[in-house]
Length: 271
Image (cartoon, rainbow, N blue to C red; front, side, top):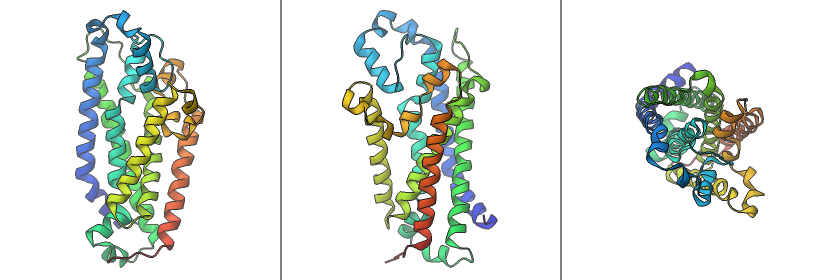
């Protein structure tokens, strides 16, 4: 790891990371404050309708049972599409910077002229992006804790109870970082790299949703990263999702290694 490159990457990512961290904090805070009052606003009979159950089952990626419990409502706050979008968008924004973003900006020649190997450059910047993910998770949890203070009669969840979910969310973020990095090193244009990753993630999200409603999709649902991120099961069972963490961690590590090898060996055209 090169300290100078890491500091440069941290400075460049600071503004973007702060913006995404604020978004994660605000949205998680709103969900934590609003979701506990849902049972008071919507009748329990309505929530037990089969079609509604199917919709929430697709959202949460597992059978939900009683939607009015504090566990189910807390899980929704951590698997909401907007929360996933914030984390995924940050990962894609940052991890497509090198080399695709630098090629688009016309600065890849300057970056490549530094007395640092490509592997050192890639490793230093990637580690900074992973640390940015920690900032997002902490900001989201802070927003959750603040939001709970405004929720009447809410069963409050603390750091200890949510720790497995937070770690699972972070490893999911890291896996998306690896996928985005791989897309970036395989492209000469950032727009294409971003579109490719978003396309894959949207496909995975749709697959995870359909798997709860359609048997053929269920047989291949393991191909979606969301198959390994199910906050409701984690909160309901109170155990660490070891298998999910290993699979997501391995996916992130493999995609990063492949991306690093490709970046180290590929020819880069600047015109």
